Image (cartoon, rainbow, N blue to C red; front, side, top):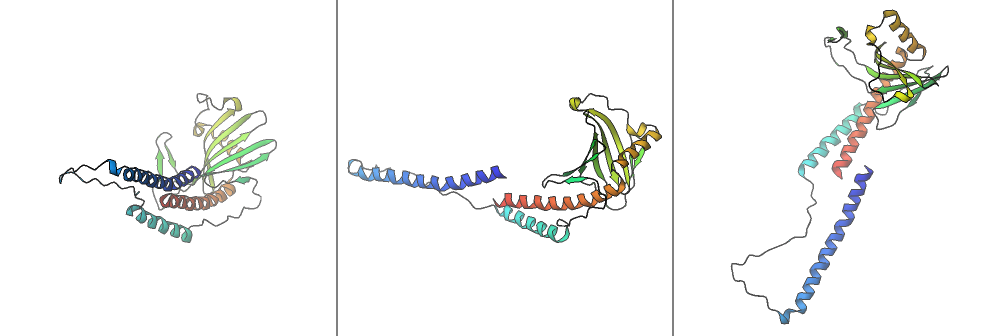
Length: 254
């Protein structure tokens, strides 16, 4: 946006300068021609010589399609303001252990907390919304039925001071949290894409899977937390959509 603003200001300041230079140049040639007129007579080219006209005017009228687009954007902005929860502040539930970092313009928020010398970090993404009744999808790779419910993706990282961390890729459904994958990370090997990340989480022993769910729950990743986050991210999605619409309008109007 800053770069676009600089370009617009540069263009607007150079346009009058270009017109002024054109006028000076035209007057300069006119003065030379007038001064030398007694010494030089314009030849008669006859009735078939073409008349050439040049215009220094610059077309600045916006296309009509832009006006139509602006009207539609304005209508969408009005609708978003009247119907969405863009200005709603979700009340943090009692005992919520995380600090929320929410930067406008980003589609994620970050939660952080310390737990017995560990740093727990949660990256929360925009919700995947499901509307209406649809049959549950079947995961061909795991032969598992995927719950057909709205959800929010989470990446939970539990780090120790030694530089080692556990990274969980999760999906939170209403009153339920699913762990899709689990990997052990070392700070110095974060870019090692070929590193072994363990078996598919769903293939682990049932008792081990339950133990990891309990591991996350103790650190604050539980349904009461994710249910709040779902509502929070719905409100954020409304806010970000309104900001996006206003940026579109600013661009078209510029």
